[in-house]
Length: 92
Image 1 (cartoon, rainbow, N blue to C red):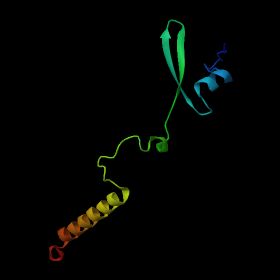
Image 2: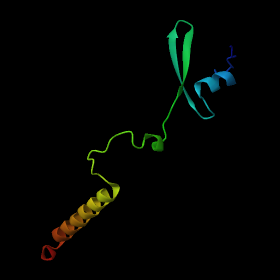
Image 3: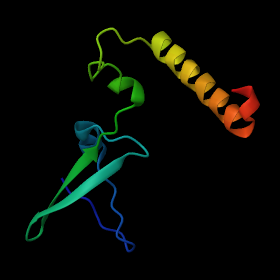
Image 4: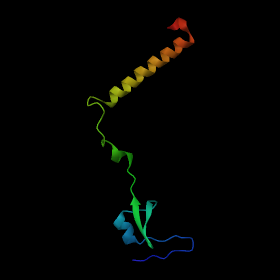
């Protein structure tokens, strides 16, 4: 299969090649020089955040989002109380 190089260095990747490597409009291609007069094109695959969910085990098997939120709120409340005490020692 061939493709012509335009004056500004652009080429049109044939549809069969785009389909074969999963390249869609707006996609990114990695170009590697593999030897004299040779190069390869590889479609760069970017995973969506949702595709990565669950790919790592939680640090603690008992972890939950609700527990993490409670812990965050408790820490935030404690820090706010400490800051108020630093500003006005009579409120400690």
